[in-house]
Image (tube, rainbow, N blue to C red; front, side, top):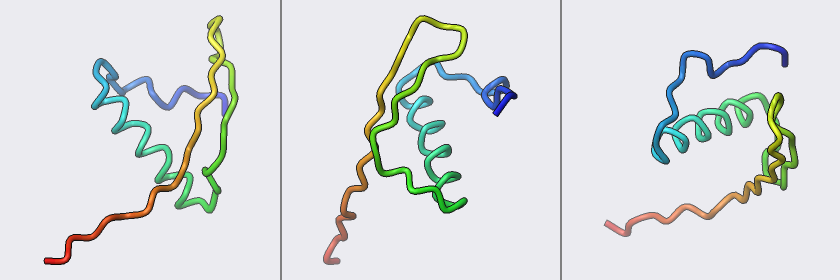
Length: 64
């Protein structure tokens, strides 16, 4: 991927980060990408390296 898909997105809070992350995960799942794993990557143009662990949790349903 060569373009920056976040150029029009503001991430200035944990809630905004979670919203963007959820959208990325759901888009990948919709494209049949199994996102459950540890993902290691470098942030392009930065000195940061990251590892993100994605684990699918069981949904809890109310008995009501």
